[in-house]
Image (spheres, rainbow, N blue to C red):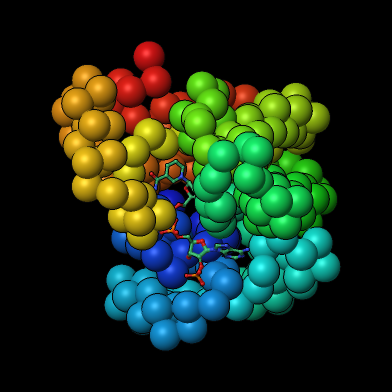
Length: 248
Ligand code: NAP
């Protein structure tokens, strides 16, 4: 039997990249999947159709994860449609990279709001439901940059480090209610986010990765599947690096 059969998952930011791969992986393992996006309406239609073609239900909602009220509305909508939420993946995220001395308040605020406050917004909205049903899984998408820092990413690394602290606190608060909370810290994964980087920077990164390749979105989705399933039923408060050994 498919390992997420009968489960309901909500993935933020799933029109592209890692979120899309996670949504499709969960659907291929039997979960009904709701997902959000910011503005890629056509891509959302395509992902919804891809999920449905796997024989499960899909729901696509345009909603800014940085908005507290909108996140709560999304969770209510998913519960209305699918009855409950078993798995939340806080994946939506952006970068606005520049040197600290050039970083505007807007560049700081928008990255913190989209990456960190968004995770709070959705966790706050699903926690009461999961606590009441005495089960649930929350997965946070951090980054190895949240552990090690990176030049020109003061805003991004702060948001990703914050996520790790949040996830551990959630694990401690909600563990007694059967809710598990874990973090994935991807290294260098090929998506639109990293495609913006110049070729020579990409090559330089690759030489520093012990497995000598960039990660694929499926590398991350496979880890998400493990954390979402009962295969990881005694794992909570952990950060798993999916980085080819880069962050050792
Ligand atoms: P991506 O290809 O740029 O896709 C980002 C997704 O998030 C899109 O679906 C986008 O929707 C959505 N999104 C962005 N801001 C949003 C918001 N405010 N509200 C709702 N949805 C929003 O990114 P990715 O590379 O797959 O990254 C996914 C996550 O993994 C991010 O949290 C990122 O920080 C993390 N990560 C990525 C890497 C990497 O190497 N790629 C490494 C470490 C961590 P639209 O299509 O509508 O814009």
